[in-house]
Image (cartoon, rainbow, N blue to C red):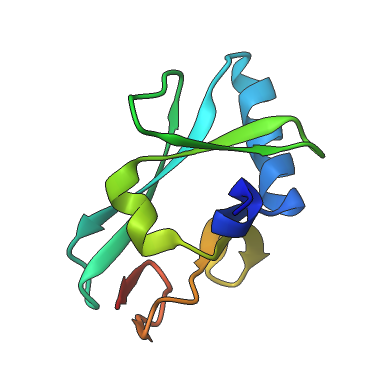
Amino acid sequence: MEVQDIITLSDKAAKRVSNLIEAENVKYRLRIYITGGGCSGFTYGFTFDEKENEGDLIVHNNTANVDLIVDPISLQYLIGSVIDYEEGLMGNRFVVNNPSATNVCGCGSSFSI
């Protein structure tokens, strides 16, 4: 199975990551992680990270030449997901289109499986 089949960083999200990294002039990568909580059970989290830990999956986006990092525990909840970036009435944010989520809260930041 290809890495891109496991989880995908969309071109739009990758370009946004690239712009944020350029503005800060650092060599960070976007990390996505899952924590317990939120109105639906699990919550998506995003942070910039300069290091990778043992077992992390690195997903590279060639269009913007940036990486997405996922730890092995979070990955099990994210298989098949597409990480995207949207601008809208709820603000500008990274969003997760997760095929495993059976219930998603109204704002899209928490989910259940």
